[in-house]
Every structure is written in structure tokens, then in C-alpha cells.
Amino acid sequence: SMLAFRVRGETDETRVGISVIRRTGNAVVRNRIRRRLRAAFAAELDPTLGPLDIVAVGRPGAVDLPYADLRRHCQRVFSARLRSRAGR
Image (tube, rainbow, N blue to C red; front, side):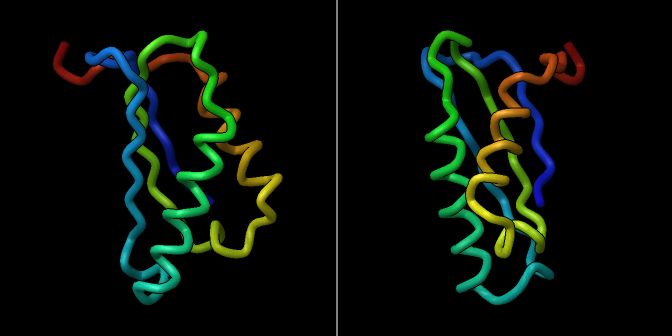
């Protein structure tokens, strides 16, 4: 349903960037996936983790995935081990 990366943020707040690949569907479908992912990340955001930078790429399955499952995917992003920034 999505591919996501999380790194320690360089600002004072958590930022989530969401991209949806074009082959997922038309603009209506892509925007629906973006809205669902944005809402799921907001629901699962844990302020105790500190500032994070998250990049999520929505996949075609995200449009039909039950919202509870989508939230579980987002929760896994927050509980995953931090990656180091490339080139640093």
C-alpha cells in the first residue's frame, strides 16, 4: 500500500511528504490516497519521538485498504529503526 522512509528531522517539527505514482490512477484516485495517508499519519503521530522527516509513496492498494490497516502501516513507520541520511 505504501513505501515509507523516516529520518531524524532537521527542523523543530515532524514533516510528512506524500507522493503517489501516476500509474496508481487518475487525479481523483491519487488525491484520495494522499488524503487517506495524510489522515492516517496524523492519527498515528507520536510527539515523543521528536522531529522526524517522513517520505511516503502511495501505491495502488492504498485506495482500497481498510483505514485501520492503513493506520497500522503508518504506525509501523513510526516504530521502525531510523535510517541515516544519505551522504552523511
